[in-house]
Length: 155
Image (spheres, rainbow, N blue to C red):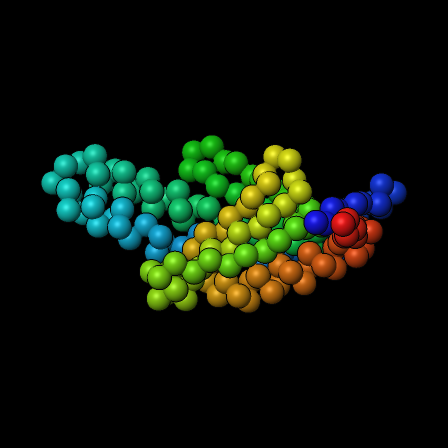
């Protein structure tokens, strides 16, 4: 079993500047195909069309941004919610590729973290998930080394 220990004297700025994004993407619409199909079958009703528009906007306005120190996730149509994850808190990175997403070259990246507010972060319907996971892994390791976070094996 492994445990994460951080150097309390390390400052967040040691991982490099947190200015320009390294990677930026929106959540793909592929995951909503079934929902859109049902709404279109019931298009003679007004409510399913409004629900489809709201779902489309909600997905289109869901952004992911990777900086040298953080992964930022923004979502919301009328009110905006931003969640930031310090990269040194990432414990594990997993890639899931459901059939429909894989047909379109997309997938889901699941991050297990030591963050109390968000122990599991999912980046849904991301283009080229292996490349993004590799980029994330490189920056997580770099930030963990710079922050002084190390794994301690306990037996």
